[in-house]
Image 1 (cartoon, helix red, strand yellow):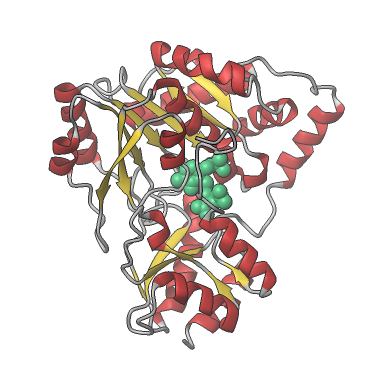
Image 2: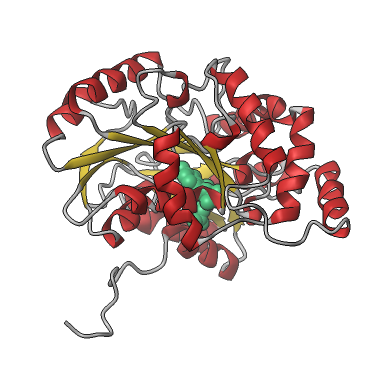
Amino acid sequence: MSIFSGKLPGVGSSIFTIMSRLAHKENAINLAQGFPDFSCDPMLLDLVEVHLKGGKNQYAPMAGVPALREILADKISSSYQQKVEPNNITITSGATQALFTAVSAFIKPGDEVIVIEPAYDSYVPAIKVNGGVPVFISLSAPEYNIPWERVRAAVNDKTKMLIINSPHNPTGRIIKQQDILALEKLVQEKEILILSDEVYEHLVFDGEKHESVLQSDVLKPYAMACFSFGKVLHATGWKLGYIVANEELTESFRNVHQFTVFSCNTPIQYAIADYYKEKVYLSIPDFFESKRKLLREILDQSRFSYLPAEGTYFQTVDYSSISAESDFEFACRITKEHKVASIPISSFYHNKKDEKTIRLCFAKKESTLERAGEILSKL
Ligand code: PMP
Ligand code: GLN
């Protein structure tokens, strides 16, 4: 094989890049890539300035700033009724790095990793770069329930890890207590690692509660849970997150983290540590639920039908009564002709399964949602 052949030939640009680029080119409203179009809390920005100007500008400790890990440990212990020590937490450069490093730390060539689809786009490349083999379990609209019997049946001697994501991007589905019980049963029978992507932990609506793998004693030896400050602080560009795991898993994680990233942005870690004292994250569900309500009221006037979305800042909609085009063609055409960009759900499936659904991001100002809604309701 040529020395010039890389490890991920032909992956191309991510769908988020493709649709954001198209939105920009077409001057369209971008409901595609998941990021807010409003700014973060001025108090947080002031805190960043305090620490930047106060000299917190050199390397942070490898695992993260202690003050931040302490406040996170308290937060996790009170949210999930499980004692977590600061030393179980490692600050990462976004959840993407946490996921990638967790896979790199454990997956060896030939190991199988179960991926539940639709799946966030970074999981499979992380598995493949490490020589792992993704094994897909496909969910179906509109319920997207995890078929635990099929997951169980997919586990064999080569299976090392299962990746789960709740609240789920792109469907908004959240796992329930019975899913945690099914996971417990699975690890008791089969002994596999669980990598749990919980970046939307605070974006859970309708009075429901986020079920974290961290709340389970049974899962503790097997589970790593990753989080993103980007979602909580409305600051996706800061690329800071963290991973939580028991001592043994944390050690293996840090063995790789230490030599790939070493440590993450220092002043912002100090600023978040101060900011989290205010527990501002508790107001997030109401904040985003009112945006979901606005988007749904608009969609009620349209020919789109919306699917359940119990969490995240995404609403998946079915456009089959508007067009028979593929979801990618539809999303591109609507961006070009009507100036609203979205994400086709087929891009979250390795086989591009097309259920005539697209994802709309409602982490936007009311005026943005109203402008987009006016257009969508005329289609
Ligand atoms: N997992 C999911 C499900 C996501 O939606 C995202 C990004 N929005 C990430 C991981 C990556 O988070 P980060 O931007 O902190 O890397
Ligand atoms: N997580 C964001 C989304 O789902 C995208 C992040 C990215 O562009 N990689 O839209």
